[in-house]
Image 1 (cartoon, rainbow, N blue to C red):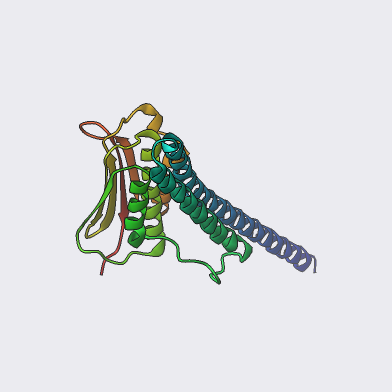
Image 2: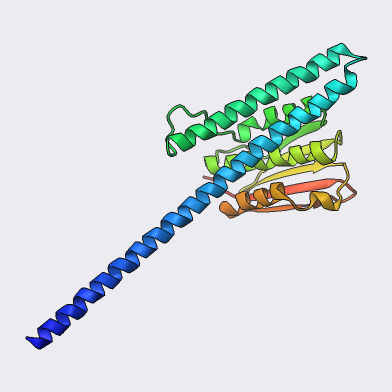
Length: 236
């Protein structure tokens, strides 16, 4: 009886310890998931706010510069401010909608992807950055997360051009490779130390690492600044 009592107590204690360990592991998993989601939301907020606010500031400065001499140019700049503000509100509303519905898809607009890059380049041109888009290779479908990561990296790179390089000619290259999707954004502006690190570049690296990819950012050969993204993809 004593042996049964001792062994039973030991077995009950073992079960309780295992249950406690399982609860602690589940809590760690929940904390990790919450941290990952907070980082994702922070990246989205940074990309949306940084890009749209930069557009508003640049166009407002252009409107101020032409106010007395070129009313038509001023009107175009103010229209660009209006469009950028409305787009920012729409994107923020969509992001807040995700939070309210706990990630549900109801009522959400599709996340931007590779097919939206021409519009992004057009927006850059509208705010004074002479950007061009080149596509190499036969386009193929990639998972939405990878497409969003590529879009956000291009968006951040073009925002940085507007901030640091002004009207420097900029080329956006999308290369569909057999095992990797590559995106390059190269401008001919200054490539000083101020452009090497910051929340934007850190966010690019985090997005790339999430999908097993990498980002290289630094001075381009012959001057200027280059951002090079590589994301592994599976093609059929």
